[in-house]
Image 1 (tube, one colour):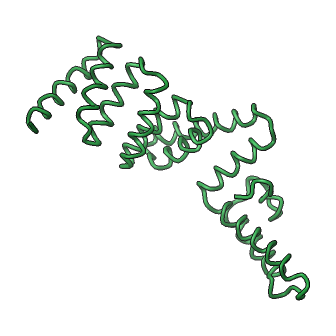
Image 2: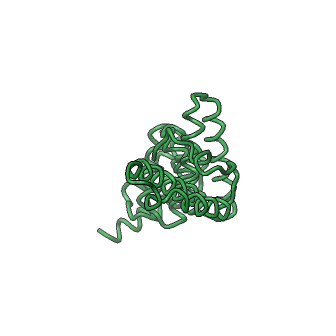
Image 3: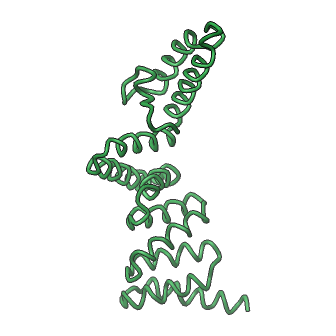
Amino acid sequence: MARDIDYYGLLGVARDASEAEIRERFRALARDAHPDRAPAARKAEAEAKFQDLTEAVNVLTSPDRRKAYDFDLAASKGVSADADAVAQNYLTQGIAAYKERKFTEAAGNFQIVVGRNPRDVKAQHYLGLASARAGDVRTAVRAIEAAIAIEPHNGALLKDAGAIFRQAGLLLKAEKAYQEAIRWDPAAGDARKALEEIRVQRAGRG
């Protein structure tokens, strides 16, 4: 993605323009900007501009790519507070989607946050939970492992890690996570129960 190009400015649409508005504007511009309509001397310039317009409409009409582009646009202004506010907004949106059981949408929001700040433990934790519930176990394991690396003594986090590892079939990792969860939160009865179930499960496999 060409971060030095303002796709909204290029298309002449507002930052909150709908997908339909963006597509309509692109069609209008594309007719005039098509390289076939340019004189031979300006063919290369016209092709480059048309390529930028095409990339702009492709990015701004894809919800995930548009979110990432908006984040980069805010960050490129050099105002870290703005970037932090944008990240917080995606985190808030992700949590809201997670509570509404829109797990794939939630994971997309959390993915954007951790892509910019891998040490955001809350985003990594929620990315693990949302991905697990969306069926993307590989991403879930990677995210929850990243969260544990940041906060290795967080009992609630370790308990959720145990559940994710168990879902992924990583029983040894799940057992260790539950053991650590009980170590840091001895009152976690559900972790004790899960630990016993895993030990029975592992014994059965043996």
